[in-house]
Length: 64
Length: 478
Image (cartoon, rainbow over all chains, first blue to last red):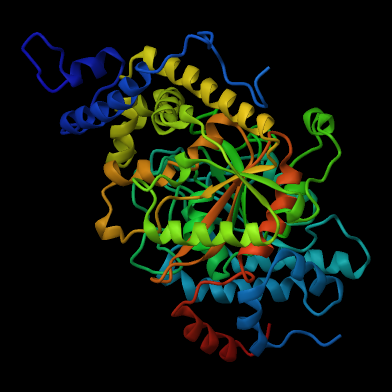
């Protein structure tokens, strides 16, 4: 997200595609917050989850 | 028996618990109306400093208290909490009382129903004396006026900020809050009170403003583990799962207790020395009391904060999608920005976070069953409360939830207990995490641990006591 080129959609355009009209001045703040969340997300991509089924939904209690 | 005098009230408020109140009410040394008078005197004296309450009405509370006093006088007792005032975080719906959820963006309607958790307390004879400050939509991004009970320049914790502070200063006897990543346990620990997050689903969340439905829990703030157990017994129906659990009440003394410690929670890269010192002292006391401290490792906990943030962000974005489109400008900027960013997260991350969450849960299951643990112990929060002027939310908030978010991901019950003060007179908490649906066993163990590591509840000292003394003497009665 940091090296935005003319071909890279802006945060505002992405938000609009998601149905959000960003407030004036929010662009850079949203970009920074998104970068923080993406960093968390990338941390998760490095983890081997092969033993866990996809489309998992949380259920309370110990694993069954 | 002689009634409690006005001059005794300050001392009494600093030691008051639900259990003690029940004794005083039953022996007619105190009426519910007296109790309301005491709590409101403290509230009025402390609020200009700590800002824990959004709303509280003395006349309405007094009227409710008098009705319950009359019932008691005629021999009619509704239940365990008869005549006791309860304060609730302003995300719980209470019929006829405005819910604000800490936000101008919330629709601010006075609901026509009451949250199930609150209703269970009302059915047991309690009444709501006020609503407490929450961070906006319980997300923790904005900065409400609430200040730490022990140092007014410091962070009160959140998002149930008002609840932790009010119980600590004595303007609430007990409180209900919500906890999606530590929002009960963190303010409880940072203000020196007991905070409990039950097993996921053990206490109903209907009638509570949602943040992240698979992480959201209703929790309690009290001054002792015994009070916590009493309140939990009111809040939690005996579900099928609770019935299925063995009837054991857990260890009857510390000699039989097996308590795990895991390096993830006390990593010196994250845990401040002053917290580590209190935690180590607590472990020593537990060992001296005969508990077996069992060292375990769970490498799968490493990404817990990342998984917690992603699950919460994805779910909160979905919860707020419509409101964000329609009333976005009414949110505070930090909350709106995070929700907007969360709305742009790739779905891959949300799915992966759920898978990592399951790995963490399996790891916990293996640790608890493999080592026959009664509980896991850790510092509740790796840090003490920081000066608000020094806090950088993007840097610091993740550290504050590092140890608490794990139990939100796994759904295990977890309770924080005060374990003393640092040299700067700031409270530190230890967290006990238990087995799903063994909440009562965990709270029984918490009572034993509390006895071993702390020398009774310590109320927050405050400059409001001088003002309160003059208020009480001027009023001249209770």
